[in-house]
Length: 346
Ligand SMILES: NC(=O)C1=CN([C@@H]2O[C@H](COP(=O)(O)OP(=O)(O)OC[C@H]3O[C@@H](n4cnc5c(N)ncnc54)[C@H](OP(=O)(O)O)[C@@H]3O)[C@@H](O)[C@H]2O)C=CC1
Ligand SMILES: CC(C)(CO)C(=O)C(=O)O
Image (cartoon, rainbow, N blue to C red; front, side):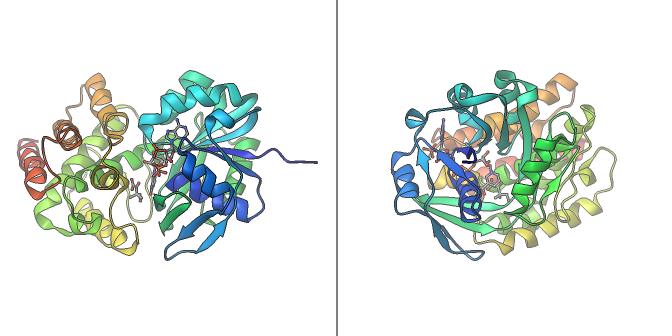
């Protein structure tokens, strides 16, 4: 009997790493990616995982979307959020009526996925390990990190238990949760800060360690927490990053300690800069700022929660994407000044 493969749609840093580990463990996997050279490398010479955690090369079946035939019960979506709509439209005909799409992405992509394939065919996942696609068939696995899976309605279902078991084969500390939205919002809090770090060329750790920049991380954490609170979300984090410390009315000292922990945590990875920095500085392409961070401001407006720091951040990232500003300390200073005025008027 042949076991149906798990389709991994988007075989870059996240999808490729998951695929390589599953394939090495004997789990049938089929990678789908729009980069023909990467697809060719994965299925012929193999996908190499490099870096401090592991080094191995695994040949993995891989196709471009145009080459794909058949329907599948399990599809892991791991494209950048800006490609979600296009990818979901392309994968829909290949999703079995009783199948599901698991989003291994940053942001609230589950909303867009569910709108197309249905909420009952959508599962959520929070991924916080660090990886970079370095070229066809080559991925740097920079650091281990939290992996959490859960149904978007909070139910513990057999299929969520099955995906959790598979994820345990990659990350032994993976969690099965009844509150996946809490984790996704927690990542939005950290994610907004990561976008802030990408305004300069400095590493994530150097950004978090600089006392001059603290005001930015506090303002962003507080705004995301205020929007999440207005929507009734209890946010969850990872390690010593508890996004609830930024919730309305909470004291400042634990927030400062949390940022100090982030400075230490982000100093222990071979992936020194965020994926956002990489999109801007290396890949020279648009980031996920609109679907990932712009949505916080939009949901804030809906709930009557002002998000001036988030809005300034979004507009500065657009400036860098469109070549109006460089990634520099001067660009970050615009946000520092905005956050100073926000925190003093709060
Ligand atoms: N990298 C990391 O460390 C982390 C990333 N994440 C999140 O995971 C998600 C995936 O990011 P990441 O793996 O870094 O991204 P990558 O760009 O490394 O990988 C995505 C891959 O999908 C391809 N792709 C784009 N559009 C389609 C499509 N329509 N159909 C099939 N393949 C497509 C991309 O090609 P092309 O490059 O040509 O667009 C690329 O090869 C993002 O939401 C990110 O924020 C979360 C935690 C950590
Ligand atoms: C920093 C990281 C890897 C999370 O740990 C991330 O989410 C990103 O690069 O966008």
